[in-house]
Amino acid sequence: MLKEALKWRLEYKPEAICWEDIVHEAETGKIYRADYCDKYGRTVLVMRPGFQNTNSTKGQIKYLVYCMENAILNLAADQEQMVWLIDFQGWTMGSVSVKATRETAHVLQDYYPERLALGILYNPPRIFESFWKIVKPFLEHKTYKKVKFVYSDDIESQKVITDNFDMDKLELAFGGRNPVGFDINQYAERMKEDDKKMSAFLTSGTFLKSVHQRSESLVAEPQSEEALSESSSSGNELKEKLSCKTNVATKTENKPDVIQISESV
Image 1 (spheres, rainbow, N blue to C red):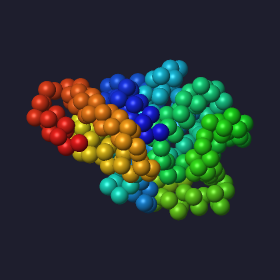
Image 2: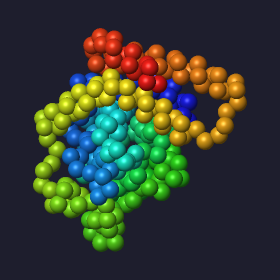
Image 3: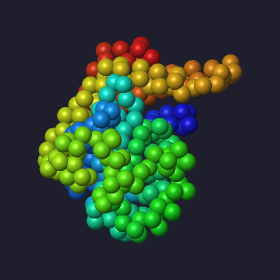
Image 4: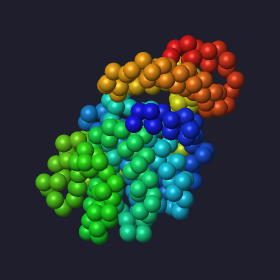
């Protein structure tokens, strides 16, 4: 999984996606990073599949990847997972395609493993139960065990919300007391600032160090000499490609920074 995830990152270049690339996907607020965290300091992504505004699976996945990268960028230092709040306002069976759902599950599970701490499905309509039966086989067991169904008229299920969120910060749509909703103009400014943070992150050398540290933590079994040799060769190629992508992402030629990054691996 680690090898495939790194290969995907080299080819897809998720960290190089910027706000201007996906702004048309974001207009309705179908996915956005909330300006609050849960009680444990985890980043919160709000998803409203009923607000789907495009037909391109490729474009939808690109926006999802941008949102995931942004959520990870804003994780607290002691956190590696996030929370998804999924609001079913306006949702119908025609809101999403099985193809897009399958591709979404593939990207999230294979390329962002263990990033989900909790997924809350808020007020899903009864018809969603049929859709859930279609989606469930695409999900790993430990993934769908993290998904909780919450209903505004079910006090018992509401405990998932109250146990994890400060109700003064949580939006009204999820039973909270925060009246501020999604505003595309304000959100655009936040994302543009985050794009600057991402560029600074990529040129600081911290990016490659974090990749190296996460790789070490995920590799549990000892490798043969042949595997280690292949890993070293892949590592050198990774350094070169990521250095090149750093220049693309920042749209500047800053050779000292690139050298610094290469030496930090």
